[in-house]
Length: 431
Image (tube, rainbow, N blue to C red; front, side):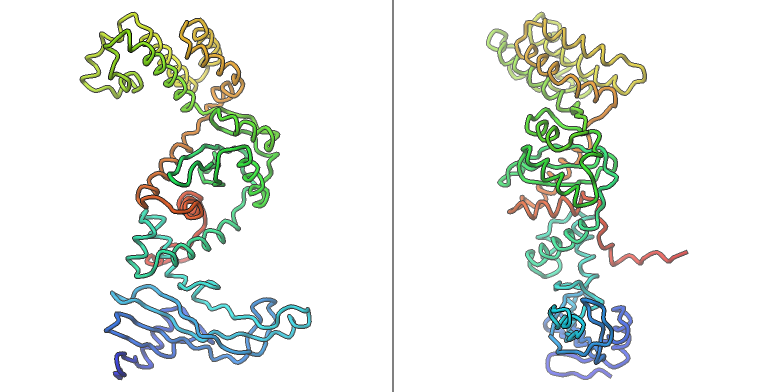
């Protein structure tokens, strides 16, 4: 029978055995006492290690004497609506083998229910990862739900992500995409992803050639090789192009078609802004010219007469749409996209529209990278999707105070890491 002691309630021996099994403990670990404190809305599990000699957790030497025991507390999954805590006096062994090697002799034993230096049990950490990774809940909200500070959760998540990234292999990476992302007070960050899997490989602050150097160092540390990178999909940022040339010697650059369309849109809008003083009817029509025709509203369809006028903006819009159609044809077999690219560049050069003449010069200068994109139908669509996912995380969290926290969330949600699974779902039974 349970006996009431002050504010707490101590469970019977049979209940102790039940919770020993529920926590997945085995000899020499067992639950010695369960204390239910209703006023504090908490339940406490006292775990005892009955062994007097244990293996050394550092070198594995068997049968080493216990030096002392240190009291530790871990937060566990909630028990109904009550917060749960695991208490244990964790043994520290004095290892003679380590002493003979001139290494520290005393080492703390690893407990089976938690990581080293963690204040949460493994199941608690798995729940936190699930809530942040799968539900998209901000860390602040998860912390409020579990009754802990968000800084404790950040420390746990950073440790889990760092440990998971150490096991990542990049040996099979041969094609990457790189793009920049503007993140509020943090500034610009560079995001490198694997074109094959779509997983984020590296996140660094800034958008310079040095960011490629940092990625190559990370790639090498995870078993990859810069010599094995065959293609890099990117925009026409000079820093990235220089970084690829310096640090990825065998990589061929492929320019992102979305960025090329963006450049064409900017050239077209420059023409419209220059002409709007002479043609007042163009005022307020910027987004009409930029939007895809399939997205035009009923009111924009009524502007058909404007596209039939003999104005410079109309010609600029026709050139922009012709370039977009050229990019669509790259996925069609046997389409003469390279010939059409040369004709478009020639058309832009003869257009007498200064923005498009400059754009034609840019495309001609980077023709090799555009040609590779057209021939291989490459794009940075995954990068755009990754940027959208990062922006969604930023919006839900209402911004991140530090780059380290942003990086942790990006790796956690988009890095394809092997992290603890949901503790509320039973593991599949082996066949």
